[in-house]
Image (cartoon, rainbow, N blue to C red; front, top):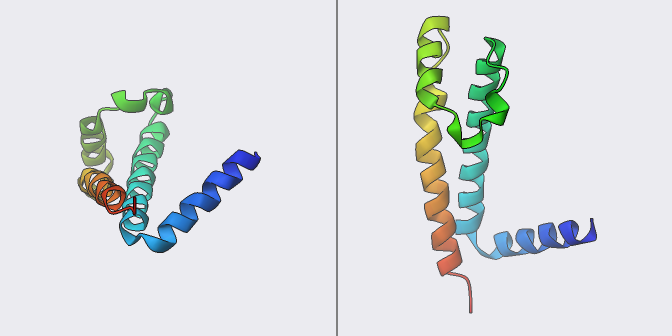
Length: 99
């Protein structure tokens, strides 16, 4: 547990000095929340294994269900741009770390 706290403190210290890593982390967190929201909606219509599918979750299934159940489609359309932007920002942040 101490190691986890030490890692969290180190991460927060890096984020204080490197805005790129902070922004990248926020983008990844927002993408994760959108993914969780889509999976919860799929669970509500009976897909019991949705949280065990991991990377095998077909987001096109969400689009089809969204059309059928009149859910908003914006989580699907914002998920990938946020995820890719988060990875890009994290890479920029790591490149700009002092050596």
